Amino acid sequence: MAECEELVESGVTEDMPRVVAALASILERVADRNDAAAAAELSAVVAPASAFRATTKPGISVRAYMARIARFAGCSPACYVVAYVYLDRLLRRGRRLALAVDSYSVHRLLITAVLAAVKFMDDICYNNAYFAKVGGISLVEMNYLEVDFLFGVGFDLNVSPETFGDYCAVLQSELLCAEAEAPPAPLRLQYCCLSEDDAGAGCSAQQQLAA
Image (cartoon, rainbow, N blue to C red; front, side, top):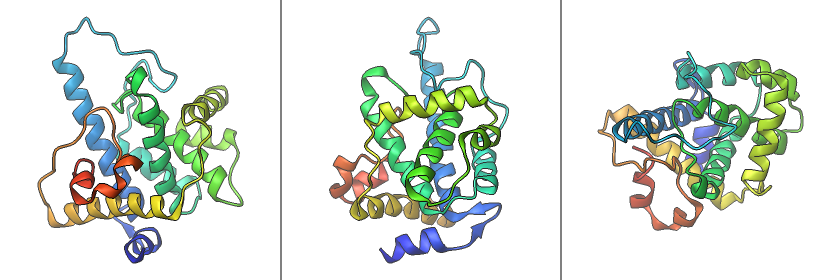
């Protein structure tokens, strides 16, 4: 848990907190990998409809979007770890719908996961209208995404200390790899996060994600 405390309590790296930078790095790489995988498939294959999937790619990078959220959301660093857990739960439950983190979905998934985490974790938080402005979407869309997200995770919002520590370890590994300029490890393409079912599998399971 010492590493976890260091991750969520340490200062900023470049333009954002360390935990935010780690999460942005992971999701940005996953989105790029999934974009490449989709491009390699037949053009006739149509991506499944999803409230989180935009019709066009947003003009802001994942890292810049995360920096914007970190700047204006005003939430505790731990919320980003919890948001990471929620994203994993959503994607694992959404496998039958083939929901993937790519350039069309990652921004909406991020803002909604952070919103859900803030409401569950922090005593004081901004309302949906504010988060909609931060995320660059309408209030109607923000409300719809929140409801869809909550049903997607089965309203399973509690995160145990053990699970929190497992996801912190993945994020910490991401930072260490980035600082050491280590080459990325193999990454699962559709499901961006370390499954809680894999949490006890050790370093090999974490390397699937924290490339």
